[in-house]
Image (cartoon, rainbow, N blue to C red; front, top):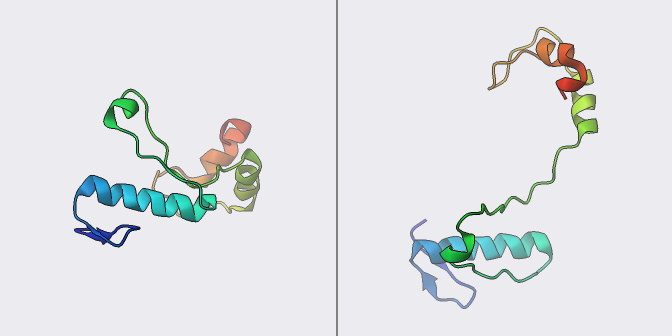
Length: 93
């Protein structure tokens, strides 16, 4: 994206400003309007930021899904057949 409007209506053209605008937009969208503060590069060095808004997949969901999957189907992007995952039992989960 080359440019985007900020909350104040001004056009943002610098990449860090555009990224921060998208971050605040989605943070406000998913967190019910909580404010996000921009961190400087000094504060983020040495640790990774997690901007994921997805919930974690539970072990129960994995077990249920493995039970529903049928054998002898096409493999996924990891090239591991479902038979292998089922044979591993709890370690496969």
